[in-house]
Image (tube, rainbow, N blue to C red; front, side, top):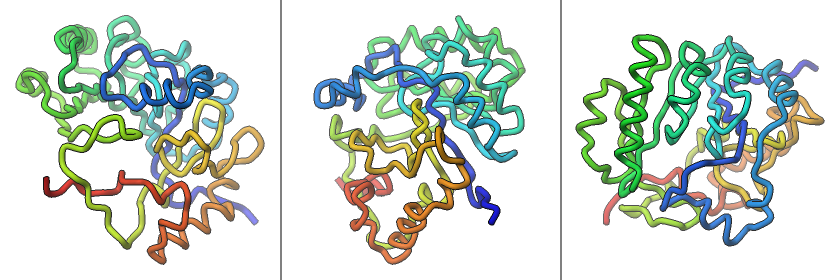
Length: 267
C-alpha cells in the first residue's frame, strides 16, 4: 500500500547543531553540564543526507532549517536551501554571520527570523549586523522576522526596521530559565505538533517535535534506513496520536513532562 505524508505541514531540519553564541538563558548550558556525551557530538549533517531528505519532502510545505544550533554554521547552507526550491524555506538565527554569508540566503529563502534576547551584551552589535544585512538585501527576499524574547532593550529600533515583530516570553528549556508567568497545560486535546510536524536531527533521527530529547524518547524512526512516509505512518506515531485523542498524553514518556503546549497565565 502506498504511504503518504498526509497532514504534514512543517519539517524542522537540523543542518547543524553547532552554535556560535553563548546565550545566557539557553538550555545548551545545561546540556553541556549534564549531558557531556551530547555536547561532544555537536556537528553537521552530511550533505548526502540532506539530498536524500529533500527528495522526499512534499511540495509547498514549510521547511525550517534549524532545530538546535545556528544554520549559518553549516558549511553548505546555500546549497542545502537550494535543494528545497519547491517548499517554503525559513530559518532562525542569532545573526552573527548574516552579513558574511548574505549571498547564500538573499533570494534563496522565504523568511528569516532573528532571535533577539533580553539582557544580551551583544545586542547593539546584533542590531548593526542586521542593518547591514538589510542594506545588502534591499527589497529582495527573505521576509524578515524579529523575535523579541523577554524584555528586549529598545524594542522600538527593531520595529523601525520594517519587518514582522514577534514578541515572546522567555521560555524554560530544560529548566534553565523559569517562565515569567506560570504555564497552564490543558488536560485534554491534541498537540498539533504531533499531527502536522516532524523534526529531523543532524544524524537523521526523526522526532515528533523540536523538544530537546537527550534520552531519545521522541524518536519515531531514522531516515537513513526508512522513508519519511513510513516513519510518518508508522505504528509508534499512530499509537501516540490515539493516546492524545484520549487525553492520555501522560502515558507517553516523551510527552508527559512537556509544558511547551501550556499557556502562560497568572503570576
